[in-house]
Length: 205
Image (cartoon, rainbow, N blue to C red; front, side, top):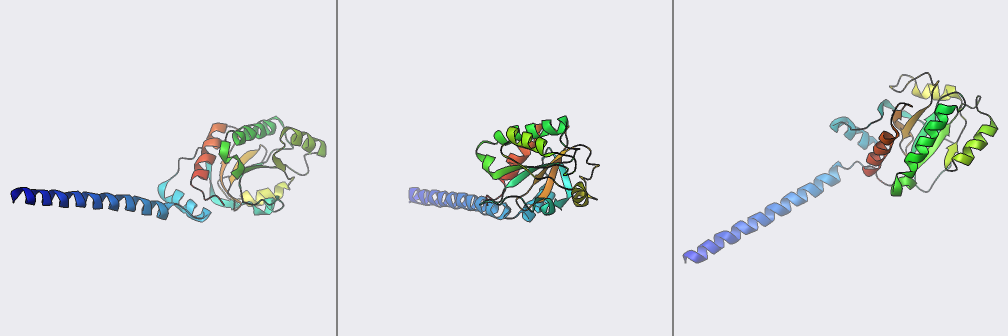
């Protein structure tokens, strides 16, 4: 009789352990589904709530780059963008930054297809010959000459506002929101790490 009672107690304890494990696993999975952001706005809210480990500088508030990206060729899925803008024409600093962005793009491996590179040079300071030369060196770079005044209007009053005498990178979401920026002094590995981190938690659309 005693052995039977002891066995029953052990069985009950074992069942409780199983239910507890199932409850914990189910809770973790449910929490994961709830917390993963489904839109860029939700992702931004999560960053504000939990903080961020980004290596680039946050753009506050986020900026709508749609006016300067309106003529960007459409793709089956909207992509993240590394947008290079600023500078006079494309001097050595500009060329170095474009080269670095190309290296970062190549190092993204299987994520490469979710990102595109865009260069917005000053339409009045870059000549067609220079554009043709850049296309040879950067065959997968979209070059769209732009009026600096338009860019200045977009960045005005934000944390990324600058005199545009030197180029900068902007990380732009598939919805054309600029969320991070990098100067020539930023390490290219930081841009790479930030992109990988963002794509990891961003829905592949």
